[in-house]
Each structure stands twice: as C-alpha cells, then as structure tokens.
Image: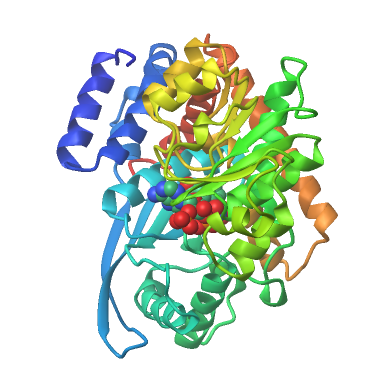
Length: 451
Ligand code: NDP
Ligand code: 2IT
C-alpha cells in the first residue's frame, strides 16, 4: 500500500468513518487518493476549500422500496438505489445493476469510479450509478417486466435527460432498458429519448452501444500493447464473464487476430483451445439465457474443450487477461499465477475487477495494466453519443459510431499515458487515469463555486 500524504490520510479516515461497512467504496477512494499524492504537491489549490472531501461525498443518495408480484402471486420486496455522485461536468450518467450483492456501498463505489471515467471520455456527463438487490436469475420475462416497471415508478421522479441518465450494467441489458423506458413514458407522458441509454434501435438506441464496452477495452488494451511494439495478433487471451462486456471483447480481440481460449460465468469457466466459438456463447447467453457449462456440453468435452465448475479462470495460461465480470474477481494469488504463466497485459472490462494486491503484483512484474475506469469507458462514451443522437433526432451508421468510439478510446489512452508521464510515473495508467479524471472534475467544481 502506498503511504498517503497526511491531508489525504485524514480525508480517507473521514470517508471510512462516514461510510462505515462499505469496503468497496473505501477501496475505490483509497486508490484515487493514492494517485493524488503527487497532485497536491504540484497543485496545492486542489487540496483547498475541501475540494477532495466534496468529490468523495455523493451529491445525492436515493434508497427506495421496490414492491412487485411474482408469477405465483406472491408479493416481493427489493431495495432500489440511485447515487447521484457528481454533476460538475454534466447530468449524472451511469448504469443500473440488478444483482443480489447490490448494496449502497457497491453503488457508491461504482458512482465514484463513474465520475472519473466519464470525465476521461471528454463528453459532457457527470457521474452516477443505481441498481437493486433484485436477482434476475430464473425469473420469467413477465416478472422482469413487472420488476422494472415498479423500479421506474419510483426512479422516474429522480431522472431526466438534463438531470440523470441511467443505462445498463450487470443484470440490465436491452430488455430491461426497454421495460424501464416504456414505464417512464407512461408516467411522464413524454417520449424523452435521452432519459435512458442502451435503448433498442427502433426507439432511439445507438448503433454500436451493445458492442461499445468490449470493443473499447480492446482498443485501449491494443493501444497499450502498441507502446511496446506488441499486438493481439497470435496472442492467447482469457476473458472472464460471458455477458455484454465479455461477449464483445471476445468479438473484437478475435477480429484483431487474438485467440480467446476461455470465458466464464459465476458457476465456472469453459476452455476451448481452438478459440471460443462466439456464436455459441451468444446462443447460450443471449437467446437461451443458460449457464456457460452448456458450452462444453453442446460442443462435446475433449479435443481441447472442457468446463471447470468453480475454480479460477486465471489459472488458464494466457498472454493477455481481460477481466469482464465483476469487482475483485482477480486476486493477488490469481495475479501471481498469471505472472508465472507469462501474462504481458491486463485490460479491465469490468469495474475494479483486480484487487489492490493484484494491481501491485502486475505493476511490480512490469505487466501492462489498464484500469477499468479508463479501459471500459467506451460503453458510457457511446451512451453519450446516443444522447447526442437523441438530442438532434438523428441516427448514425454503425461505421460512424464505431469510428467515434475508436477515436475517443485513443484519446483516453493518450491522455492517461501523457498524464502519467507529466506526474512522474511513465507507463502507470492507474496514476494517469486517476489524475486526469480528477483534474477535470476538480477544475470544473472550482469554477462553479462551493457546490
Ligand atoms: P452482464 O450482466 O451482461 O454480465 C455479467 C457477467 O459477469 C456474467 O457472465 C456473470 O455471470 C458474471 N458475474 C456477475 N457477477 C459475478 C460474480 N459475483 N461472480 C462471478 N461472475 C459474476 O454484465 P456486463 O457485461 O454489462 O458487466 C460486466 C462488468 O462490466 C461489470 O463490472 C460492469 O460494471 C462493467 N461494465 C459494464 C458496462 C456496460 O456497458 N454494460 C460498461 C462498463 C463497465 P452470471 O450470469 O453467472 O451472474
Ligand atoms: O460502468 C459503466 O460505465 C456502465 N455500466 C455504462 C454506463 C452508461 O451510462 O452507459
């Protein structure tokens, strides 16, 4: 652990006291504060007027009851959250997560990270995050619809195209956004396309939004490899998860000549030494909504195809690791295993998937490491492009949208690399991303007075 400057240590202690029992939030704040050691030495104005303390305190936190009726007519209760973290750069923007592990600390860490990520994109969006402890697994389509309708019946009064613009995250994809949009429209009597992103193409969605996070991480990781004269071509890659981010990471890595040999879900991982068959993953996950174990069953075990229940996907030797499932899924032990197996780069598709110990292992071993708040920013950046299309009542081609995404990711990569260099930590993308994101948010807040 990096020793914090005295001022920052005091700020962290206060954040931990005020947000007791929220370890993920503490972890996310600590990482950013560690990067600010050099900033406050160089730019002392950023330690004045409680600017850092204000950035660590969400502007607004909403917690609400979500009652709904299941298929057996039983009344169920879940808890809904929206943390509106920071609006210095634009309306709050960030996804909604449906997962039983969701609590206020998880949503807070995600909203905090989102604020800096959104700043890095250069788009006019503030940071927010929401969700529920609702578990969509095994629920019928009708149950999902009723849940989404009830969730938005409360959420609708807090969101809007100029206020707060949610999108998807774990457990929330195109289907759920559709149900939420439909209910928002009924409640407000407004076809307000810009209130949600990740919509279907027929009613204001953007081309390339489903692909954007996975594609974006691939562009970022490729740019990072490029700084050492390396590329994906001929490399073996392991991608954890098999949801939205993982799927389109596999797609783009394969297009660049990489061979993705493993992916996973929360039950276990599948290895296919011939290269993961993406069509089959999509059939299992998007059409049938089944477990990844089905992959090995349908392909037939043997000939380089096998499924491992439980276990760690990071035991599979690879050149590039792209964690794309959830927070803290890659531990220090996993990182040591990856390093021993010769990993050269790690690109985070998920939010905070590597533990602090894992990051430290990679950095000390000289492994190229791209933090999620920079590498996975392509999703939210394309959401901002969706808002732009909605505002101008336009619809861009796939090629045009993807070209904008690629340019934004190149911009984020270069900004992080240059900022790391400027602050005396060349090649350290964690420092680069945290400092560049922080400076943009902090500067906008300074110009707007004590807010
Ligand atoms: P999905 O719901 O589409 O997929 C999530 C995948 O991760 C599933 O395979 C899921 O397995 C697995 N997973 C989820 N929770 C756990 C867990 N606790 N342990 C092990 N595996 C788990 O979500 P996304 O692909 O959208 O999101 C993945 C990550 O990327 C998240 O960290 C999210 O915050 C981040 N992200 C998403 C963006 C987006 O645009 N969607 C943008 C930027 C970041 P199972 O089905 O078994 O639960
Ligand atoms: O973590 C993320 O950046 C997302 N889940 C996407 C947010 C968005 O508003 O598109």
